[in-house]
Length: 362
Image (cartoon, rainbow, N blue to C red):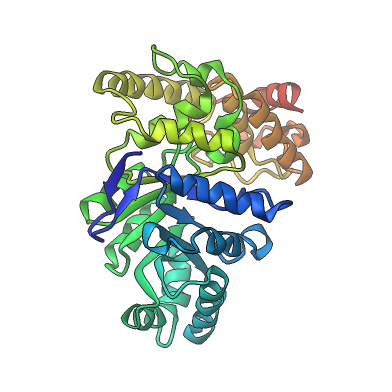
């Protein structure tokens, strides 16, 4: 297992973190044993949250670290449900109880955005004030955040100076936070990445993904994880693992001293740029075509179509499209009014492409 300095925290973290949200819930003992096996094989960063697995994830992690608390780094998350520091403190105490520990190493403001930060977190008597108190008391050691917002707002959160580490989405399909990740590293924050395999989308077989580098990889999931770990600004990549096979494979990849060689990185960068160019032939995602009078989410439909024709991820494309259909936002709802085409700065034949998307993915 490879290890990295986690920003300026003074903590060394394993390159692979155990995301405890996909553990087998039908057999708690099996879940605990899997976590312990991960620790035994060198994983020292365990990531959970108050509500994962219907509230059982923290309990599993607490059982797994019993007797070896000094060997592990525990990361968990507090959902910002209101602007009350007192309520935030109650949720912290619940997590400490479930984890059966005296302290939490990295405690995250969970899934925040800029509006939530300014209106509910950094306010008088709010969660940030209470977090500083909890840190002074030794209940938490580092104040962190996990993030779901625009790349621009990620930079703003980093610049508040109130956080020591962050957890953000980053993978082959979604590189929107890449600049923010590099910026965080420059500012001394520890950087953890969630969704390195795109929430499972990159775990499906795809020759296009597997062959992104000429030497090839065993699977598209391996390619995805090697890509994330090869970014020098990423300290730890979280993976939700539900069985021993997944654990062993991910540890093998995280044990590579050099996930990608310099030559492979350069070749991959060129290939990804070309794939981005191909994807933008179909849609740049600017959103000028929206809103659609018939409720079609045009950019997202084209995103799923690109999963298939650019990356060869047909299962992920069809599953994504199915979700759109359930919400009435799928391409097949297009009434061919052509209003979108008059607004598209790229002059894309949107109606024709929506028809192709529905035919392929419905």
